[in-house]
Amino acid sequence: RHLKFHILLYRPFDFYITASRSAQGEYEAKDYGKIDNTGYDEEVASIRLGYRFFDNHYISIGYRYGREWDIGRPGPRYEPDPDDYSHIDRNDFDIGYNTETFRANYYLSTNRDASHASQKSGPGTSIEYFQERKTQGIGIQKTFYLGDHRLVTGGGWDRIDFEARRAPVGTPYEPSNRYDNYGAFGELRLSLLDKRLLLNAGLRYDYFEEEVLPTRNMAITQREEEFSVQMRAMDSDKA
Image 1 (cartoon, rainbow, N blue to C red):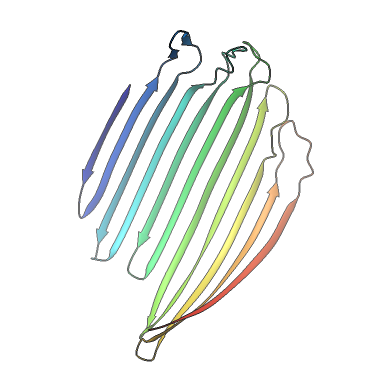
Image 2 (tube, one colour):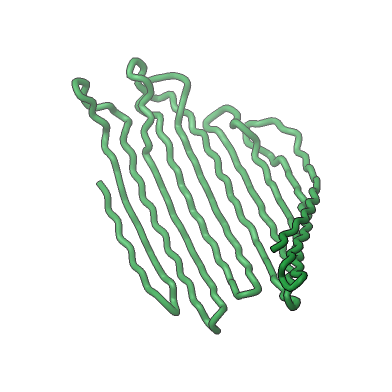
């Protein structure tokens, strides 16, 4: 079963919305019959709104939602497992502002996965494994025109939060943790000899922080790590 629709509008607004819904029942094999725990349900929706003003200014906001549930995993035919299944949730949001010489954006993404599985076959043996990964960040870029030359500067921040747990007992596959990245960059482009020679020089600096967080049913030593990276580049192009 499948259902889908969308709506579009145009300038000065850029607007669209789209959604779909699908499902699959239990799989049937020829000369075998129905195989239990093989169905799934899925729905997806997204919306984006943009607005252009003062000719070269543009702002955009978007959201996307996705969900899958009761995704069956029947196991091998000789040892069927009717209660192994998973759920997946996705949520993404972003907002951005652009001009000819400036760009800024923010994004937030959340992924949740819950699976019920076990190394033993048969009903009543399922253990839940849950993990959530949240990613967010900010980016800024500014371009300066200096006659025939150009200077681009910018920076950003990105964070990943990860949470894991296992129920009712047991330890997750990896501990909960947090990761941060702070970056800044600059690039200079020189146009020489009546634009017959182009020189590009760039520099980027990144600073990282990583922290292991308390995790249910897992004995860990909480710690933080920090390190930084510098990158330089230079090239030329002669016409």
